[in-house]
Image 1: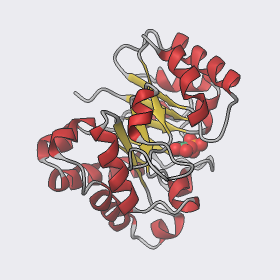
Image 2: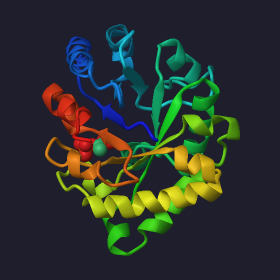
Image 3: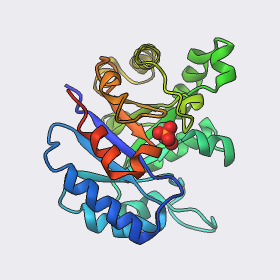
Length: 251
Ligand code: PEP
């Protein structure tokens, strides 16, 4: 009942020409994937070229971040109305790299989520524990705080737009993937949390993606778990063949 979403986070990669070519290959290879959704998130400067390529296809366009003010003296930021104008459909918010290197907090996540939904963008809200937190046994507590804090300004009428990405920090870009059972445990916990943070109906409708070293050879098994509704893919989304294999996971 939840349409799988396979999303590629290109991070700080690709010139505009490279972005155009990669997007074209992904659009071409996703044509028959009609029972699932695809989204790609290039850098801000490549949004327009990728928007031209994905126009009219079943591939959505994501921004890797968004600022909560609409305009003004906020040097370096890009706002939600601007992303909408650039034809974005999604915005990744609270990625662990932004939390780790750019001071993102649950408070800034909450403000960005509110700005995104008010501008008709689906927020892909990232949560996940560090290796130290996992080893200390505090994973669920960390996730609870990130979910409650990050969603506290999400109005009920926008619950249907929400996507969550569970990305254990220790699995991002490390080649160390969470086992399907580890992912399922946390996803099931997140869904339970959403029952109280949102509503039971919204909890069962919200897609929860797994992210962290998703590759062609592990996607099929991850996707067998009942609460894994898709993937947020970094490294493997930069190679068209690998990403398309993930998009076309065996269902
Ligand atoms: C990510 O950046 O969201 C990610 C999951 O990266 P990777 O797939 O490279 O681990």
